[in-house]
Length: 95
Image (cartoon, one colour):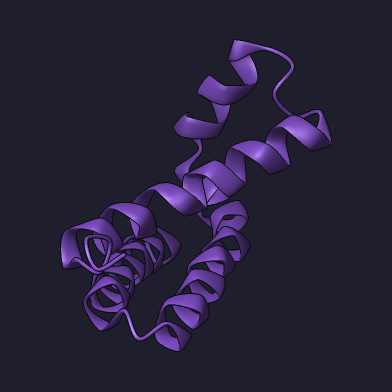
């Protein structure tokens, strides 16, 4: 499992996991009935960032798992991805 302990894998997982959680929430909540809803969501970026903040908690869960397994490089990439998301959310929140 040392192949997974890579900064790039952590960055990739940190960027993809919150989007996957967001899509699951939308599917289960019935928000994604039509393509128009998805397009409207992308057009209203401020609303998307508000909905996206709780989805970043998956990065915290993955971070705790990787720290306990001593995958420090993977954790570093995960933290970097979370900081990228935080910067984007802060930018659009105060725009």
